[in-house]
Image 1 (cartoon, rainbow, N blue to C red):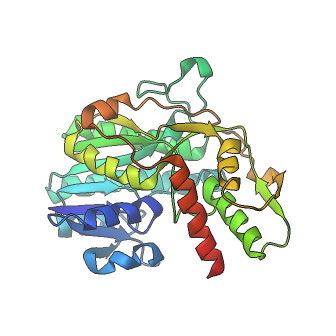
Image 2 (cartoon, rainbow, N blue to C red; image 1 turned 45 degrees about the vertical axis):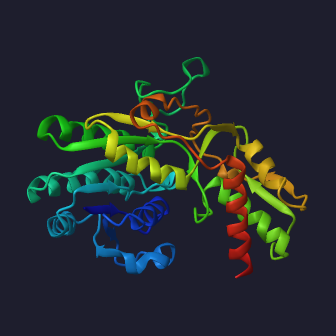
Length: 320
């Protein structure tokens, strides 16, 4: 079985590649930009096939699809940093929407008929009122950022290509997922890195800089997420959309408290205005019953274990 992952060097892509590389029946083909850092996939470089491509170049996408003739495609490549989407909305739309269109057109032109996972985001739902929780797949789209808008367009494009052309596309609306190797621009690794720097004495002050601590998030370990992605392509219905999320819901303040409970440092907590978004999604409590009913999946890794692994990862990074 040939399986293609777009964005294989990214956070989710590298973990998915690790997961699939353990399956003897799967040949993993990872699509990456020519200058993408390879650090996160270095341990499995001999087990996967790398192909250079660019979301902005439809020809490169077509060549990759036509060469591999994949049985499954996991489309994870994206501009995925919400704050960056405010600074570069056109680039965000170009990568996330036009890139997806180029991929789906490449599949049509190649004549292959893979199962295609199009990964969108819980950001499509935007700010949901408490009375409308939990968020299920029928919750109206109300995106709060250019990133959210791009993922709405990507989601609907994937649906349209299924309806019009019969492509076997399943969509996920993924809620907050984290783990070791997640970049420091995201909230849990940001806190963990600052704690590790204070512990190691390399931070100039005893301060942790934060954004909105009252946002409510539901956390899932990335290692559970990629298993869910595989099960999605094995058991879910083409044309459908599925929420995928963890079961641990808490405020960002409580998440920070969990990390601080794993260290002896007693930092000062300071709100950095630069970390506050122009419009923010502050209440994400998902309903994942549709996906669980379809697959039988459930998270295995406890929230505290995820936080400990993130902190230990950044302790090692700081020491190195």
